[in-house]
Length: 150
Image 1 (cartoon, rainbow, N blue to C red):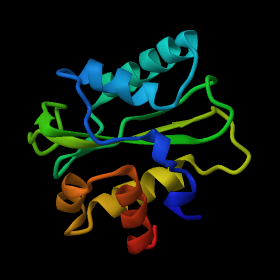
Image 2 (tube, rainbow, N blue to C red; image 1 turned 60 degrees about the horizontal axis):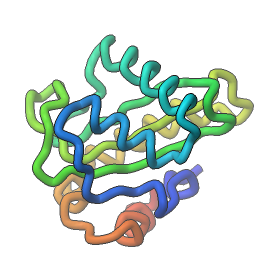
Image 3 (tube, rainbow, N blue to C red; image 1 turned 45 degrees about the vertical axis):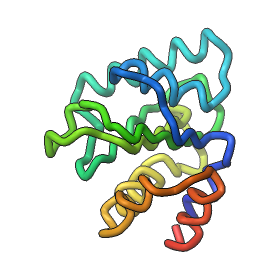
Image 4 (cartoon, rainbow, N blue to C red; image 1 turned 135 degrees about the vertical axis):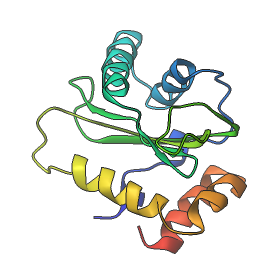
């Protein structure tokens, strides 16, 4: 299983506009191109997950994630806000890069936790946080995943 199998260029946004955690979550959800009702449901689920504890893992990266019936297979998106945002990350630093993961409650392939783990592992590579800030296009994002073999 490789991360790049789950990402597509149309689910990569390199200039998120949101000024709050809620705004960013809504923008990331928008990348999945769901209908309005499903977007609202997913937003509530992600908020509930964030209330348990921030998904900001440090080094400027957050991985908001949840399971929801609004998707019928695992979906992912990537967003970047170059100026950063207080996301209550574990290191107290602003978050600039956001990986969204949503999976159905029951998935035959059971990829939710492995994908979450791979993104966390990828994010911890020494050069990855800085490189995510310098990519110029969704194609560059996909190329970085390819280069890193994830």
